[in-house]
View 1 (cartoon, one colour):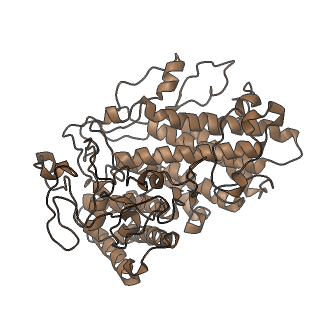
View 2 (view 1 turned 30 degrees about the horizontal axis):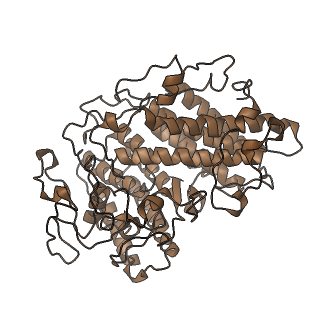
Length: 554
């Protein structure tokens, strides 16, 4: 890797702006942006890498969740909604925040008495993960000519398989480092695992599993499963912990910052996921969503009484349901779940103190205990939530998928679904502790949780068709991914499930994005890069039919 970047200067690396989080250790007294090359501190560079990784994962999660209806998407036409600007932040996080600073630490490490191998292992793991996702979302990435401006002032893209192979090599190198049980430097901060090399080794192996399930390499996937050295417990979850600081900088969960304002809620919640969870009686619903009102115009309230339509607050409650929405909730949901359907691009009415807010999981908002009160800054857990990256529950759903495609029995697949649900629900329920005002009597009982899981298992084993089975698996996986979502986009492209997703608000939204446009900033500055003209280019592992026959829900 040093060879790739041998001409880049350390001085350039330390010019990367450093974000901050609300931890005592990150109240840094020395400004890394003012350091000269020979003063560069690998521990400060590590901070930049970690925050860049967090930012990249937040972007991947948001984009993946919006496309797959886990979160609300505001644009009618996919091509207009996911422009070249969508990829700019991901590109910057990967190459400027992570890759360049990893090189800087590798250059410093041999010339100091301090061992920075832990920092290097973290950097390799984070870089590998973002490179894999860059290929998943864009189709290609710069690697062999990256950050080498003297030889390659206009670097060429490497194809997807080459970058995947390079990322897996980085993961092997990171695994070797962590297997040697290095110590985190005393002045360094590990924002993910607190300096626990064994947990990082599990995370590295799990990122490999992500690559293998994505590309259909089930044998390699199962070899890691058989090793047992991967994320199997929620105690080993790969996630980022947010803080409660409002200013300089705002360290709160982004959904909380946007959803708990004095003027009410900002972004809408997705109607699809609230509809599915409501229909199924999902015990996570009160944790995921906080209702400010007990009824939505055009549907019924919590008492079963009809709520009058309201042209000002919810204009679509007056609309005639279009033909392509037949059988789906078009505008309103029952019991006060006030969101928006996929692609609804209507303006913002005065509904900030009416629409549904992010709940206590994962954004650390309010637990929904039927108080039906407006949100305000500081409510609930004040934003000290998490950014889920890879959770143990996700891995169980990967194992369910791997078992399904391998022809395993219904009982085997269902057992993995059961394990994933059990972990997801338990983790979600643990978040009630962050809301000091929560009325815990509204929590689901252990029996209700057990019955729900049993019903889902029965719905899978009792399904008559492959579509029904995969809809159960896919729907439950997507619900567990709430707050995340990067891998939902991958699952949807490789399987086509679930097929119960809400249609787009626009009857013809254009092709579902099989890959994003190249980052517009890179296209402008790199004469060797020509922007794509559409979103139909399929990444190397996406071998399903093209538009318009796939995916079926679009």
